[in-house]
Length: 391
Image 1 (cartoon, rainbow, N blue to C red):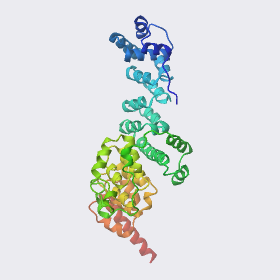
Image 2 (image 1 turned 30 degrees about the horizontal axis):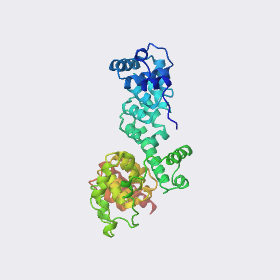
Image 3 (image 1 turned 30 degrees about the vertical axis):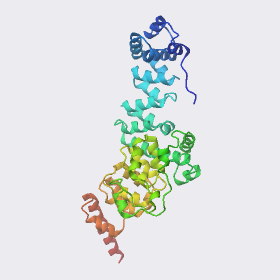
Image 4 (image 1 turned 90 degrees about the horizontal axis):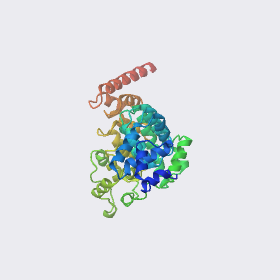
């Protein structure tokens, strides 16, 4: 997409070609100009003018522009720096903020600033519906998920979309999946799949050396029980077998991850080996940690360990329960039911899919809620009654 350029007058101000007297007239709003031109000139003066008094006047004029002029400006094709200055100094009302959110020319970082400060749920919903923008600008997703004004249902939809779409993008970029393979794995909306494919063609992050070092192919055997139990408690030494040169130093991995930006961490979470997954599942950024579940090499034992952990976030457990691939495993279902952090409604639903011997153990367990243990007892009594009737 071609970047929008400054209008001629605004460029003249930036280049120092406009006399101070004319700049003064613009700064006070005395010179009649079209909204795009006026706001662009005011933005340049407000941010760059050598005269502090003119800068202050331009900032005040931006704040006092009439609503129709503000609406025309934020809905038009402003140069990216103008959008940033305008957003900072204009007193945007709800209608103008909505127009700004809907404008495809608005820079991603400005939309992210809006998503950070906005308290209107309807405007946040508008922002969260722009799939293409979120795929190319991860900080926007983080801002939306951190905003308390975006409702829990909208956040759940956003998390589910982003996990699927961004992981699909990375897998396509790296040649680990084809468009056809992605569409076969899950029900993809045609428009979303097209957006993911288009986004995958953009080289946003590059192949960072820090990431390359931790993408080595891993052996097919499953990790042992002890490692599975420790997976979420600490990202300590792994117990993989192999030669010393094949082993990856976890301390080096930690140091590399600390230097990585969020997009790099996400790529590593989706593509990395067991050591990378064990570390990133604990990452404080929930967008990063949730992406570990999208790693095509993650094992059933790892998912069981995550499902059993008392330290993972509830939304991580919800993501596992929503994934049809994970829910084919009886061990995962059992781990979710026995985890006190699993949402009760979800645990009760999975309880109906458990075997009698596990129901007996859960009915006597002190580690699950009374509601779960009581329901397990009722199910056993009901089954016993049904068996008697059959006899």
